[in-house]
Image (cartoon, rainbow, N blue to C red; front, side, top):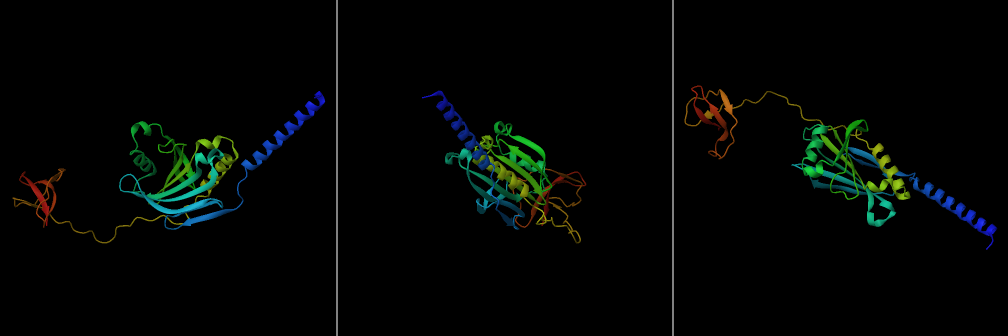
Length: 259
């Protein structure tokens, strides 16, 4: 085989390699031009998602304390690393009652249920905004094998939690992973809350209801000076309600009841 033929063959292979790389780069950054809008007035949010994604209607899941989360899942048709074994890319939007807590209190409350050894490894970033609302970002949460990025915000009387996963594969540079990264960002930027005004807490109105005066068991005086924070260990008579231990004007301790 002549040297000139070898040179031509090498140049041909190099050109083919460049063309293949160019095609892969073009395909990796391609995002579907069509998108659909999901609106849920009951949960109070709207978002745009790629037309080839699948939407799983709201389900209810228990959370820490007495709260129940309503979850809507958006599932991509893209696989991490381009391999089915790593699972599809997905976004979960979860909504629950804020219980009167601030954003920082909400995140602390959520993380309090995690064991300290795992909790210390969780990354927390502040000063993020979603549709103009202050949000916190959590990473390295336990329970997600390939990583998750969670965005938490409080709007009105509700908590919104957006979980994007998996995360580790997004930096691989493979076409499916690059496209998933772009679709995740587009999803987050289109997430909308003010379409639906936040629920307002009821405002007290009218004349305050008079509180019955506690009566002492075994003592005639009903004048209460101080109340001791003592825990009730047994329930009194059915027709009465135990209210605590009180000190009367004469300095005697007695059980207080309201009939």
